Length: 234
Image (cartoon, rainbow, N blue to C red; front, side, top):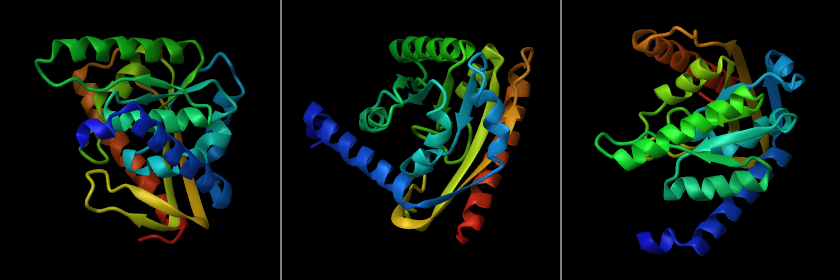
């Protein structure tokens, strides 16, 4: 069964299915944006890059931010896993190509080299004025905890980080999945709460990065809870 799910044909179908759903959610939900003016300066300046973060569990709602990121050359950082493959195909349908990267398990030298190469590619992309959208707690979690990779890209590129809290109602939230993924019903209400710009100092050491991980994870979760409150959830 696992081999079948990873076959190219099944992946193509799942990518099309998710991509179609993403467009449906974008077009039928009444989206409200709070503090979106914070990201405006980077959208109108081709020389400025950006890193945009939202939680993995809100991937089904992520095209709510497309009207902003369509205005800039934008790629997504996505895991090379089988799940990442159909997500990458779905986002490519809407004009967001992928850079495939994931954190490598300890002792896996080949995957470590792939991760380093992908981080280098992402850093160069942002340095050159592109935008990079990342789910910083994916692909394995823990839920709503930022992994260090996105902050390392911000440090090396010197570019701004924006946080995006996303929610919709009515929606089903799957408590059984590690990321508590949210699937919205069409024709409801949605909200995106923007926070930033934030920067990682060029001289930030590991201890400073760890501090930013705690602080920024809390800020992204707060933006997500605010989006939930706007649409009347929780």
